[in-house]
Amino acid sequence: MSGPYPAAVTAALAAQRIETPSWAYGNSGTRFKVFAQPGVPRTPEEKLDDAARVHEHTGVAPDVALHIPWDRCDDYGALASYARERGLRLGTVNSNVFQDDDYKLGSVTHPDAAVRRKALDHLLECVDIMDATGSRDLKLWFADGTNYPGQDDIRARQERLAEALATVRDRLGEGQRMLLEYKLFEPSFYTTDVPDWGTAYAHCLKLGPKARVVVDTGHHAPGTNIEFIVALLLREGKLGGFDFNSRFYADDDLMAGAADPFQLFRIMYEVVRGGGLESGAGVSFMLDQCHNIEPKIPAVIRSVMNVQEATAKALLVDTAALEGAQRSGDVLGANAVLMDAYDTDVRPLLAGVREACGLDPDPVGAYRRSGWAERIVEERKGGQQAGWGA
Ligand SMILES: [Mn+2]
Image (tube, rainbow, N blue to C red):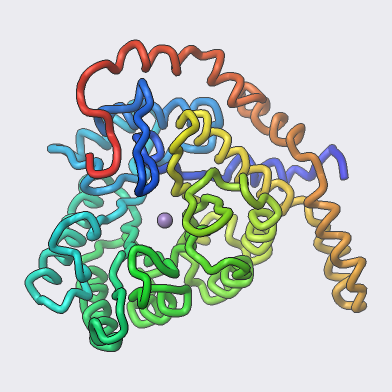
Protein backbone atom coordinates (compact mmCIF):
# COMPACT_ATOMS: atom_id res chain seq x y z
CA MET A 1 0.00 0.00 0.00
CA SER A 2 1.46 3.36 -0.96
CA GLY A 3 0.40 6.96 -1.38
CA PRO A 4 -1.27 9.16 -2.26
CA TYR A 5 -3.43 8.51 0.77
CA PRO A 6 -7.07 9.51 1.25
CA ALA A 7 -7.54 13.01 2.60
CA ALA A 8 -9.63 11.56 5.44
CA VAL A 9 -6.58 9.61 6.62
CA THR A 10 -4.24 12.59 6.70
CA ALA A 11 -6.95 14.72 8.31
CA ALA A 12 -7.53 12.15 11.05
CA LEU A 13 -3.80 11.92 11.75
CA ALA A 14 -3.44 15.70 11.90
CA ALA A 15 -6.42 15.91 14.27
CA GLN A 16 -5.46 13.14 16.72
CA ARG A 17 -4.22 14.38 20.09
CA ILE A 18 -1.94 12.41 22.39
CA GLU A 19 -1.70 13.49 26.02
CA THR A 20 1.66 13.22 27.74
CA PRO A 21 2.11 12.59 31.48
CA SER A 22 3.98 15.09 33.64
CA TRP A 23 5.67 12.22 35.48
CA ALA A 24 7.32 10.96 32.29
CA TYR A 25 9.55 14.05 32.42
CA GLY A 26 10.67 13.40 35.99
CA ASN A 27 13.01 10.81 37.39
CA SER A 28 11.66 7.30 37.75
CA GLY A 29 12.82 3.78 38.22
CA THR A 30 11.82 0.40 39.48
CA ARG A 31 11.29 -0.58 43.10
CA PHE A 32 15.01 -1.29 43.16
CA LYS A 33 16.43 2.07 42.10
CA VAL A 34 15.50 5.46 40.75
CA PHE A 35 18.21 6.76 38.44
CA ALA A 36 18.57 10.54 38.36
CA GLN A 37 19.26 12.17 35.00
CA PRO A 38 20.87 15.59 34.58
CA GLY A 39 18.50 18.31 33.37
CA VAL A 40 15.37 16.74 34.82
CA PRO A 41 12.67 19.27 35.84
CA ARG A 42 12.51 20.51 39.44
CA THR A 43 9.03 22.02 39.24
CA PRO A 44 5.69 21.48 37.49
CA GLU A 45 6.54 24.50 35.34
CA GLU A 46 9.77 22.89 34.14
CA LYS A 47 7.86 19.71 33.31
CA LEU A 48 5.55 21.86 31.18
CA ASP A 49 8.60 23.43 29.50
CA ASP A 50 9.68 19.93 28.47
CA ALA A 51 6.18 18.92 27.40
CA ALA A 52 6.11 22.04 25.22
CA ARG A 53 9.14 20.67 23.34
CA VAL A 54 7.28 17.44 22.64
CA HIS A 55 4.32 19.39 21.32
CA GLU A 56 6.51 21.73 19.29
CA HIS A 57 8.13 18.85 17.43
CA THR A 58 5.11 16.54 17.07
CA GLY A 59 2.26 19.07 16.81
CA VAL A 60 -0.16 16.61 18.40
CA ALA A 61 0.65 16.70 22.13
CA PRO A 62 -0.77 19.91 23.64
CA ASP A 63 -2.31 18.20 26.69
CA VAL A 64 -0.31 17.37 29.80
CA ALA A 65 -1.68 15.13 32.53
CA LEU A 66 -0.99 16.13 36.12
CA HIS A 67 -0.43 13.85 39.09
CA ILE A 68 -1.39 15.06 42.54
CA PRO A 69 0.62 15.38 44.79
CA TRP A 70 3.63 15.09 42.48
CA ASP A 71 2.55 18.30 40.71
CA ARG A 72 1.19 20.05 43.79
CA CYS A 73 1.44 23.85 43.59
CA ASP A 74 -0.03 26.92 45.27
CA ASP A 75 -1.98 28.26 42.32
CA TYR A 76 -3.37 25.84 39.74
CA GLY A 77 -4.98 28.65 37.77
CA ALA A 78 -1.52 30.19 37.37
CA LEU A 79 -0.13 26.81 36.32
CA ALA A 80 -2.86 26.57 33.68
CA SER A 81 -1.91 30.04 32.43
CA TYR A 82 1.74 28.99 32.33
CA ALA A 83 0.71 26.03 30.18
CA ARG A 84 -1.45 28.16 27.89
CA GLU A 85 1.40 30.59 27.28
CA ARG A 86 3.40 27.63 25.94
CA GLY A 87 0.65 26.33 23.68
CA LEU A 88 -0.32 23.62 26.18
CA ARG A 89 -3.40 22.67 28.20
CA LEU A 90 -3.50 20.98 31.57
CA GLY A 91 -5.16 17.64 31.01
CA THR A 92 -6.24 14.71 33.10
CA VAL A 93 -5.76 15.00 36.85
CA ASN A 94 -4.38 11.75 38.23
CA SER A 95 -5.16 11.12 41.87
CA ASN A 96 -2.79 9.37 44.25
CA VAL A 97 -4.13 7.39 47.18
CA PHE A 98 -1.28 4.92 47.33
CA GLN A 99 1.79 6.70 48.66
CA ASP A 100 0.78 7.54 52.20
CA ASP A 101 1.50 5.33 55.22
CA ASP A 102 -2.21 5.37 56.06
CA TYR A 103 -2.93 3.43 52.87
CA LYS A 104 -1.13 0.25 53.89
CA LEU A 105 -4.40 -1.70 53.91
CA GLY A 106 -6.09 0.32 51.19
CA SER A 107 -7.54 3.77 50.55
CA VAL A 108 -11.24 4.04 49.66
CA THR A 109 -11.68 0.36 50.53
CA HIS A 110 -9.71 0.51 53.79
CA PRO A 111 -11.46 -1.19 56.74
CA ASP A 112 -11.08 2.02 58.81
CA ALA A 113 -13.62 4.72 57.94
CA ALA A 114 -11.17 7.48 58.89
CA VAL A 115 -8.69 6.34 56.25
CA ARG A 116 -11.49 6.03 53.71
CA ARG A 117 -12.51 9.60 54.46
CA LYS A 118 -8.94 10.84 54.01
CA ALA A 119 -8.69 9.11 50.62
CA LEU A 120 -12.06 10.46 49.54
CA ASP A 121 -11.04 13.98 50.59
CA HIS A 122 -8.02 13.68 48.31
CA LEU A 123 -10.18 12.62 45.38
CA LEU A 124 -12.51 15.56 46.00
CA GLU A 125 -9.51 17.89 46.22
CA CYS A 126 -8.49 16.62 42.78
CA VAL A 127 -11.88 17.75 41.44
CA ASP A 128 -11.25 21.19 43.00
CA ILE A 129 -7.96 21.24 41.09
CA MET A 130 -9.79 20.28 37.88
CA ASP A 131 -12.07 23.27 38.42
CA ALA A 132 -9.00 25.53 38.64
CA THR A 133 -7.11 24.01 35.70
CA GLY A 134 -10.10 23.51 33.42
CA SER A 135 -9.35 19.79 33.18
CA ARG A 136 -12.08 17.48 31.96
CA ASP A 137 -11.02 14.18 33.45
CA LEU A 138 -10.19 12.74 36.84
CA LYS A 139 -8.23 9.50 36.59
CA LEU A 140 -8.72 7.04 39.40
CA TRP A 141 -6.38 4.18 40.01
CA PHE A 142 -6.49 2.36 43.31
CA ALA A 143 -3.66 0.26 44.68
CA ASP A 144 -6.28 -1.25 47.00
CA GLY A 145 -6.38 -4.97 47.55
CA THR A 146 -5.23 -7.69 49.88
CA ASN A 147 -2.27 -10.01 50.08
CA TYR A 148 -3.73 -12.95 51.98
CA PRO A 149 -6.97 -14.93 51.88
CA GLY A 150 -9.17 -13.79 54.74
CA GLN A 151 -7.31 -10.51 55.21
CA ASP A 152 -10.44 -8.49 54.48
CA ASP A 153 -13.93 -9.02 53.14
CA ILE A 154 -13.92 -8.91 49.33
CA ARG A 155 -17.57 -7.93 49.10
CA ALA A 156 -17.39 -5.24 51.80
CA ARG A 157 -14.46 -3.66 49.98
CA GLN A 158 -16.58 -3.44 46.82
CA GLU A 159 -19.31 -1.69 48.82
CA ARG A 160 -16.81 0.84 50.19
CA LEU A 161 -15.42 1.41 46.69
CA ALA A 162 -18.88 1.99 45.23
CA GLU A 163 -19.72 4.47 47.97
CA ALA A 164 -16.55 6.52 47.39
CA LEU A 165 -16.99 6.51 43.62
CA ALA A 166 -20.60 7.70 43.92
CA THR A 167 -19.50 10.57 46.15
CA VAL A 168 -16.88 11.64 43.63
CA ARG A 169 -19.40 11.34 40.79
CA ASP A 170 -21.80 13.64 42.66
CA ARG A 171 -19.04 16.24 43.06
CA LEU A 172 -18.17 16.37 39.33
CA GLY A 173 -19.21 19.51 37.50
CA GLU A 174 -20.75 19.95 34.10
CA GLY A 175 -18.56 18.37 31.43
CA GLN A 176 -16.26 16.68 33.95
CA ARG A 177 -15.69 12.93 33.92
CA MET A 178 -14.16 10.23 36.07
CA LEU A 179 -12.02 7.57 34.42
CA LEU A 180 -11.67 4.35 36.37
CA GLU A 181 -8.48 2.43 35.72
CA TYR A 182 -8.08 -1.27 36.44
CA LYS A 183 -4.96 -3.30 37.05
CA LEU A 184 -4.62 -7.02 37.46
CA PHE A 185 -2.21 -7.10 40.39
CA GLU A 186 0.53 -5.13 42.13
CA PRO A 187 0.96 -3.83 44.72
CA SER A 188 -1.61 -6.30 46.00
CA PHE A 189 -0.98 -9.94 45.21
CA TYR A 190 -4.07 -11.85 46.37
CA THR A 191 -7.06 -9.65 45.54
CA THR A 192 -7.14 -6.32 43.79
CA ASP A 193 -10.30 -4.27 44.24
CA VAL A 194 -10.41 -3.11 40.60
CA PRO A 195 -8.49 -5.88 38.83
CA ASP A 196 -10.08 -5.96 35.39
CA TRP A 197 -12.26 -4.21 32.83
CA GLY A 198 -15.36 -6.07 33.98
CA THR A 199 -15.11 -4.73 37.52
CA ALA A 200 -14.39 -1.22 36.26
CA TYR A 201 -17.26 -1.46 33.77
CA ALA A 202 -19.72 -2.68 36.40
CA HIS A 203 -18.91 0.28 38.65
CA CYS A 204 -18.99 2.78 35.76
CA LEU A 205 -22.31 1.45 34.54
CA LYS A 206 -23.88 2.11 37.95
CA LEU A 207 -22.21 5.52 38.19
CA GLY A 208 -23.78 6.70 34.95
CA PRO A 209 -22.62 8.79 31.99
CA LYS A 210 -19.87 10.70 33.83
CA ALA A 211 -17.91 7.53 34.53
CA ARG A 212 -15.89 5.64 31.97
CA VAL A 213 -13.22 2.96 31.93
CA VAL A 214 -9.60 3.71 31.09
CA VAL A 215 -7.50 0.96 29.55
CA ASP A 216 -3.86 0.94 30.62
CA THR A 217 -2.22 -1.41 28.14
CA GLY A 218 0.21 -2.70 30.77
CA HIS A 219 -2.46 -3.75 33.27
CA HIS A 220 -3.52 -7.15 31.93
CA ALA A 221 -2.51 -10.75 32.26
CA PRO A 222 -0.11 -11.93 29.56
CA GLY A 223 -2.03 -13.03 26.48
CA THR A 224 -5.11 -10.91 27.23
CA ASN A 225 -6.83 -9.75 24.04
CA ILE A 226 -6.85 -6.02 24.78
CA GLU A 227 -8.41 -5.07 21.45
CA PHE A 228 -11.47 -7.16 22.33
CA ILE A 229 -11.88 -5.15 25.54
CA VAL A 230 -11.50 -1.94 23.54
CA ALA A 231 -14.11 -3.02 20.99
CA LEU A 232 -16.56 -3.97 23.70
CA LEU A 233 -16.13 -0.81 25.81
CA LEU A 234 -16.43 1.40 22.73
CA ARG A 235 -19.60 -0.38 21.70
CA GLU A 236 -21.04 0.29 25.15
CA GLY A 237 -19.98 3.95 25.10
CA LYS A 238 -17.81 3.35 28.16
CA LEU A 239 -14.27 3.73 26.82
CA GLY A 240 -12.89 6.90 28.38
CA GLY A 241 -9.36 6.57 27.16
CA PHE A 242 -6.04 4.83 27.17
CA ASP A 243 -2.95 4.84 29.24
CA PHE A 244 -0.53 3.72 26.55
CA ASN A 245 2.75 2.04 27.39
CA SER A 246 4.22 -1.31 26.55
CA ARG A 247 5.39 -4.31 28.44
CA PHE A 248 7.24 -7.55 28.03
CA TYR A 249 6.29 -9.02 31.41
CA ALA A 250 4.00 -7.05 33.73
CA ASP A 251 3.41 -3.32 34.22
CA ASP A 252 6.72 -2.42 32.60
CA ASP A 253 5.71 1.15 31.57
CA LEU A 254 8.03 1.06 28.55
CA MET A 255 7.49 3.25 25.50
CA ALA A 256 4.16 2.66 23.74
CA GLY A 257 4.60 0.49 20.69
CA ALA A 258 8.10 -0.59 21.69
CA ALA A 259 7.39 -4.12 22.88
CA ASP A 260 4.51 -5.07 20.61
CA PRO A 261 3.69 -2.64 17.79
CA PHE A 262 1.32 -5.21 16.26
CA GLN A 263 -0.80 -5.19 19.42
CA LEU A 264 -0.93 -1.40 19.35
CA PHE A 265 -2.07 -1.58 15.71
CA ARG A 266 -4.79 -4.10 16.59
CA ILE A 267 -5.99 -1.84 19.39
CA MET A 268 -6.02 1.22 17.15
CA TYR A 269 -7.86 -0.70 14.46
CA GLU A 270 -10.69 -1.37 16.94
CA VAL A 271 -10.63 2.30 17.96
CA VAL A 272 -11.04 3.36 14.33
CA ARG A 273 -13.63 0.64 13.69
CA GLY A 274 -15.67 1.74 16.71
CA GLY A 275 -15.55 5.46 15.90
CA GLY A 276 -13.20 6.22 18.77
CA LEU A 277 -11.10 8.65 16.76
CA GLU A 278 -14.06 10.85 15.96
CA SER A 279 -14.43 14.13 17.78
CA GLY A 280 -17.15 13.68 20.34
CA ALA A 281 -16.25 10.05 20.99
CA GLY A 282 -14.62 11.14 24.23
CA VAL A 283 -11.68 8.76 23.98
CA SER A 284 -8.42 10.16 25.36
CA PHE A 285 -5.11 8.90 24.08
CA MET A 286 -2.74 9.28 26.98
CA LEU A 287 0.72 7.98 27.65
CA ASP A 288 1.50 6.51 31.06
CA GLN A 289 5.17 5.69 30.98
CA CYS A 290 8.35 5.88 32.99
CA HIS A 291 11.62 6.47 31.21
CA ASN A 292 14.02 4.92 33.66
CA ILE A 293 17.19 4.56 31.61
CA GLU A 294 16.52 6.47 28.38
CA PRO A 295 16.47 10.26 27.95
CA LYS A 296 12.95 11.35 28.70
CA ILE A 297 11.90 14.00 26.18
CA PRO A 298 12.96 12.08 23.03
CA ALA A 299 11.42 8.94 24.56
CA VAL A 300 8.09 10.75 24.88
CA ILE A 301 8.43 12.02 21.29
CA ARG A 302 9.16 8.48 20.10
CA SER A 303 6.12 7.16 21.99
CA VAL A 304 3.85 9.78 20.44
CA MET A 305 5.18 8.81 17.02
CA ASN A 306 4.60 5.12 17.73
CA VAL A 307 0.96 5.80 18.59
CA GLN A 308 0.64 7.86 15.42
CA GLU A 309 2.14 5.07 13.31
CA ALA A 310 -0.26 2.49 14.75
CA THR A 311 -3.14 4.90 14.12
CA ALA A 312 -2.04 5.53 10.54
CA LYS A 313 -1.87 1.81 9.80
CA ALA A 314 -5.31 1.29 11.34
CA LEU A 315 -6.71 4.08 9.17
CA LEU A 316 -5.25 2.44 6.06
CA VAL A 317 -7.18 -0.81 6.49
CA ASP A 318 -9.25 -1.33 3.33
CA THR A 319 -12.56 -1.72 5.11
CA ALA A 320 -14.56 -2.54 1.97
CA ALA A 321 -12.16 -5.35 1.09
CA LEU A 322 -12.14 -6.52 4.70
CA GLU A 323 -15.92 -6.63 4.97
CA GLY A 324 -16.14 -8.43 1.64
CA ALA A 325 -13.68 -11.08 2.75
CA GLN A 326 -15.45 -11.42 6.11
CA ARG A 327 -18.86 -11.81 4.47
CA SER A 328 -17.64 -14.48 2.12
CA GLY A 329 -15.87 -16.38 4.86
CA ASP A 330 -12.46 -15.76 3.27
CA VAL A 331 -10.38 -16.26 6.39
CA LEU A 332 -7.00 -15.80 4.75
CA GLY A 333 -8.19 -12.93 2.58
CA ALA A 334 -9.56 -11.01 5.56
CA ASN A 335 -6.36 -11.54 7.50
CA ALA A 336 -4.33 -10.42 4.48
CA VAL A 337 -6.26 -7.14 4.25
CA LEU A 338 -5.42 -6.37 7.85
CA MET A 339 -1.78 -7.39 7.42
CA ASP A 340 -1.41 -5.28 4.26
CA ALA A 341 -2.27 -2.23 6.33
CA TYR A 342 0.01 -3.27 9.19
CA ASP A 343 2.92 -3.93 6.83
CA THR A 344 2.65 -0.49 5.22
CA ASP A 345 5.57 1.83 5.96
CA VAL A 346 3.59 4.83 7.20
CA ARG A 347 6.61 6.93 8.08
CA PRO A 348 6.53 8.88 4.76
CA LEU A 349 2.79 9.45 5.26
CA LEU A 350 3.32 10.89 8.74
CA ALA A 351 6.30 12.94 7.58
CA GLY A 352 3.99 14.46 4.97
CA VAL A 353 1.32 15.18 7.59
CA ARG A 354 3.92 16.97 9.72
CA GLU A 355 5.26 19.01 6.80
CA ALA A 356 1.71 20.03 5.87
CA CYS A 357 1.39 21.34 9.45
CA GLY A 358 4.64 23.29 9.12
CA LEU A 359 6.63 20.84 11.25
CA ASP A 360 9.96 19.15 10.74
CA PRO A 361 9.20 15.69 9.29
CA ASP A 362 11.66 14.14 11.78
CA PRO A 363 10.58 15.11 15.33
CA VAL A 364 13.37 13.26 17.17
CA GLY A 365 16.02 14.74 14.90
CA ALA A 366 14.51 18.20 15.25
CA TYR A 367 14.59 17.85 19.03
CA ARG A 368 18.23 16.73 18.96
CA ARG A 369 19.19 19.68 16.77
CA SER A 370 17.28 22.15 18.95
CA GLY A 371 19.91 22.07 21.70
CA TRP A 372 17.21 21.78 24.40
CA ALA A 373 18.80 18.68 25.96
CA GLU A 374 22.12 20.48 26.47
CA ARG A 375 20.39 23.64 27.65
CA ILE A 376 18.43 22.00 30.47
CA VAL A 377 21.53 20.16 31.71
CA GLU A 378 23.29 23.52 31.87
CA GLU A 379 20.42 25.52 33.38
CA ARG A 380 18.76 23.09 35.79
CA LYS A 381 21.40 22.84 38.46
CA GLY A 382 20.60 22.57 42.14
CA GLY A 383 17.15 22.16 43.59
CA GLN A 384 15.17 18.97 43.98
CA GLN A 385 14.60 16.99 40.80
CA ALA A 386 11.04 15.82 40.20
CA GLY A 387 10.36 12.17 40.72
CA TRP A 388 8.08 9.81 42.57
CA GLY A 389 6.97 11.48 45.74
CA ALA A 390 8.34 14.87 44.69
MN1 LIG B 1 -1.95 3.97 34.10
